[in-house]
Image 1 (cartoon, rainbow, N blue to C red):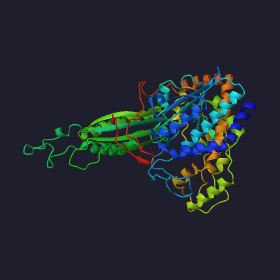
Image 2 (image 1 turned 180 degrees about the vertical axis):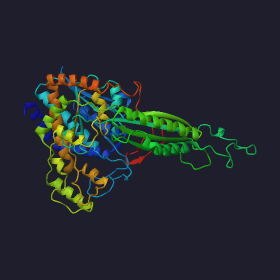
Image 3 (image 1 turned 90 degrees about the horizontal axis):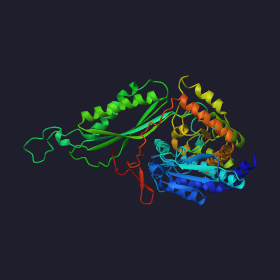
Image 4 (image 1 turned 135 degrees about the vertical axis):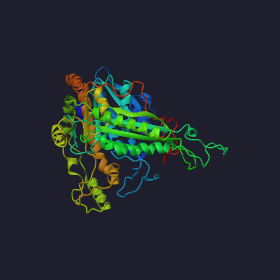
Length: 523
């Protein structure tokens, strides 16, 4: 190993306990999309203390940031943090099912976990900076804070605002979540498109629905016909969309559609027409044609529901991202670093913790309680071969993540490192969600993921900032890939603003009470 990488790896080893504590901090913050106040502030303070210039609220997003450090003229390489958690998944770092202290089970918790994603890349960044300073390596390290990944929220916005324009290469990382992508990188089949849109129904003139009679001083009296109103519009669309679901797009390719009914502050059951209701639809598709077909059906359903219930309907995009572009040049470079580092290594404490988790889930403990794939490397092209066995030959993309938008701006590699998971049960049933959530918060089981990822990414950043020939080849490949994939422009308008002003789940006061507040802006 060359001296610069030796220095970077040594930094990770020397700061192992400190980095573990950092992860525990972010894991316990567990803030949901667009409300990652404390997490973002923590990263900003840490980066500034390390000598980075940091812009808070980058791209007009209150919980985003953009950091930069330079050691002189040279290439610019980027990695990033995510730190949003998922509502209804609060779980303590224990081997029994219980929420984190001071919260209830409906509060957010880290599931993937994005806490490990961000702390791994932060450790890699600081390790690479140490090596660049010590060995006088010129270049610039760029680091962005990307909120609301679960909504594909920030990366399309950062892209539109030019935060990736002058970047020479990007290393994207995620803790493993789907076999065979464990301790490997994506090769050709990257994540697909994701669209997300909010439909707001308003019943602003309920008095014009029907005549109220002349014998009552109250135009909308209790005995008069009442306009169906916004709730009726929402559930008309909900049911109509369920009815038309199978006819939205061809029944292959792995597309999906999910909905969320947003709270809108109405807490009355009086004989009044409901005035406001909101529903969010998010759909993932392997190609643009499928995504657009689904959009057309949803828009028609919304108009139909509004017309039937005496409402108006307004829509607003939450996210709209392009499919991911492969880049073999950068991928091979990052794979070389993962190969040198090796897979995560689990000690006796991790094994005992996993065995205790088996007992808690009603399974007899085994000698090898952790998933065997966690301690094995898979070549990217071999992982690709296994994935392609599941997909139609013509399908280019599968699954969903918003790193894909970055891949249109700069050559991007997508790294996966194993995150702790139990070996399959003998009875064929899955473990409950809380088991994997808890394993992602325990130092004994999650720290090996962080250490492996930090060393791999740190070494990759050093290679990228020094290898001008590889960067030139990567940019040539990016140009070819853009042409192959239709050279799509961003799918959101240039003046798009992130919808952080909606009534997303939030914290109040001391940060331990979780609620859904009344929205400020609803259209």
